[in-house]
Image 1 (cartoon, rainbow, N blue to C red):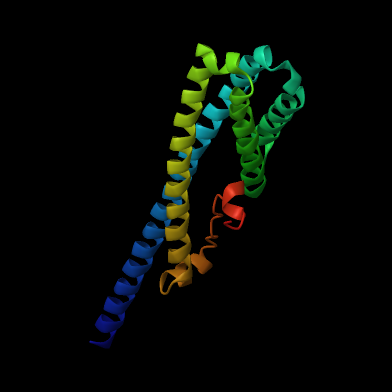
Image 2 (tube, helix red, strand yellow):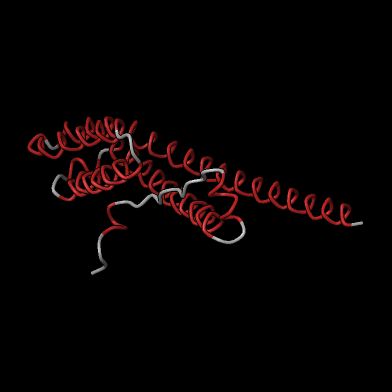
Length: 178
């Protein structure tokens, strides 16, 4: 009879570990899928930057420093290896893109350009999608990290070397509100 109870308890423990492990795997895969969504939007934005620079260059030739900075930041963003580096560079790139879009106020011909306006609309759409993808990713990271840090899942997570994921914070997230 005692052997039967020990066997039943062992089966329950193994089933609980398998359930927790599968839940952790599902949460980790959700984070990976959410990051993929962010990466798609960042790639779309990176692909749009050269077109935006070319459109502005024709009208605002005196703004060469801004255009050069945007081009350099785009290259750095594409090459960024860590999530923290990518978030920092993407924040800077976003600010510089905003500066380019603000140039239309100083250059009426640019404001009237159909190609610039089309690029501007596309960029706004990308930024909206990026903001949604970032929120979804950070929610998935929060859920994974909570599972890793709460009992009883933390026992399985520590044993199987699950690591917390990093949040994706843009430059605007890291600044204190005014």
